Amino acid sequence: MSGKLLKSGLIVSAMTLVSRVLGLVRDVVVARLMGDGAAADVFFFANKIPNFLRRLFAEGAFAQAFIPVLTEVHHQDDKKELREFVAKVSGTLGAIVFIVSLVGVVASPVLAALFGTGWFIEYLNDGPDGQKFELASAMLKITFPYLAFISLTGLSGAILNTLNKFAVAAFTPVLLNVCIIGFAIWMAPSMTQPAFALAWGVFVGGVVQLGFQLPFLWRAGLLVKPRWGWHDPNVVKVRKLMIPALFGVSVGQLNLLFDTFIASFLATGSISWLYYSDRLLEFPLGLFGIAIATVILPTLSRNHVAKDPAAFSGNMDWSVRMVSALGLPAAVGLAFMAEPILTVIFQRGAFTAETAKMASYSLTAYAFGLWFFMLVKVLAPGFYSRQDTKTPVKFGIWCMASNMVFNLIFAVPYGYIGLAIATSLSAALNAGLLYGQLHRIGVYKLTGKSVIFLVRTILACAVMAWTIVYFDRGDGFYALSLAAQIQHVGLTIGAAAATFVIVMLLLGTRPAHFKASGG
Image (cartoon, rainbow, N blue to C red; front, side, top):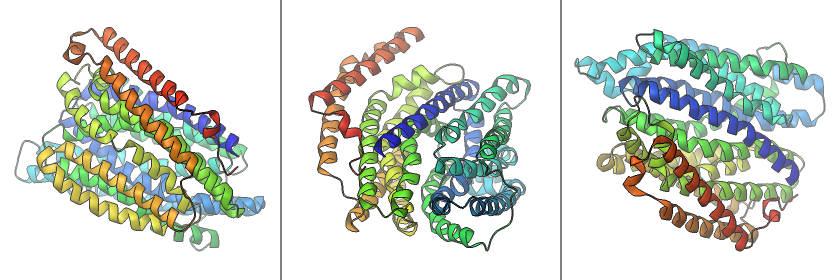
């Protein structure tokens, strides 16, 4: 099983790499077009709200509730029942997200006032930032329908992942990036407000992503006519699992929206600085953390159905080692090279050196939480695969409350940087609570093999950090040409990565450490 897990993880990572690279290209295009101005703040805001609901209905709560039940039905080897289950789930989910999308379009001014309260107050008082509220209301009408299309795309991807067809779902986000880039290049120049072109790119991207996955569902024999199935026993089981999962996933997303709410009271550019730094954080998080979490949930669900606790624990241990080996050095690299990386990737057009500097502060704060974000991604499936969605919810509520407290503590003296600090601290708390409970109920305990592996990884990261500091050119870096800056950043990353690998090997790390001990 470990070989299959590793292969599946590599496939998802490879597809995700293509998506993330194009995502960076998309962000470079957006940064050059809008920088950190008012229009950029509004676009990122208008894109965040439907993305928040997408995490609830598609990738997050729904997948966590749907995949374990789908695994059970698939395990019975009854194709007719499987097709009926997919038809009723797709019909029920589709109807719900269509209604929610329609309400979101009609109520866009209310949503803009609710989550962008600072802008709404400016609008009521005829302040200079009042235009942001008007722009956000109009833009939400375009971006909100994306929710319906991406939710059904998430359903399709969950089905394909359960059938071990991971590459399709992992590649799909590439198409969204292509659409946004295309609209930014060809449509934005002809518009009075270029941000609207990006909003239309999001809308079309949702349609294209769903259309891309349908042929693969048809080939698998699971492209069925949607039917309403609210009272179907398996749909009821998904609903019961999804309700607490909705709260669990919404905790993290509500924290992000709460950050946006606070940022609407801060200086213009705050939302953009957080967005650009978050985008760089999402690169390793998606490439490693989410990729491993994607393959581990169906595997753990099969281990649970087969009543194989040794394999379950072994696969959990494998996932922790993998995110540690990849996440810790990525966190160190982002923390110590935040400004040079942001400068090389984004600094052109409307994205200035000052924008890079401001975004680097929040990126450094986010980077210290990267490993914990990844751990949450792989520890939570330890509960969801056992059809326990209530425990992560309970911990999530505690973390949401703590994040709000952290926001109040750190946002006053540090502004938007304090919001990033609070997010990292709440992620650390969440990871600690999840692992503590898994340990307490005897489901998973970190093995001695993994403890030694973690110690080696931390030591290798310390030497890697010293290497980055050694290569640091200080202010001389900004006097270099763009080509020289790219060369310097590339050499520094290469030297740091080589140092990490060499030290890991010298400390005794071997290929066996990347195999699941439970089979």
